[in-house]
Image (cartoon, rainbow, N blue to C red; front, top):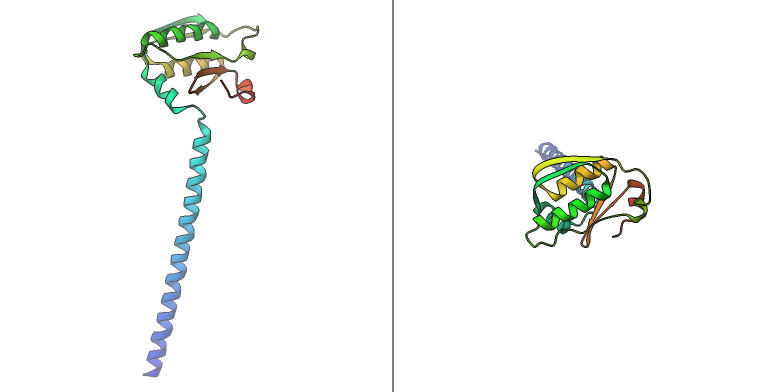
Length: 156
């Protein structure tokens, strides 16, 4: 009887030990997942420096017809500013500007973009892609710059 009791006790201790090791492993795994999720979340936050309210405003401005035919980026910016005011329900538009360093001389890549019922952000992305520019949306407006200048100056 004493031998059976000892076997049962050893079995019980082994079971408790095994469960505690398993529970500890599960706990460590969940901590690792939480850390990974936090890192991923920080990467996403860093990934898009654009002001969400300005992006929302650009998305809310639907332009019935955009027709840009072989024009430079500076002319496209003027046209987009006009279209933004005309099609903004508040008639304010979005202040789209270019980095001063990008406006000095040089040949501009011709931009061609035609589309109906498209929001301002979509047009701006397409124009920037064709011209080799980036844009940064802030509460004050949107600034276009060449990729190497955007890294130097991320302010409006």
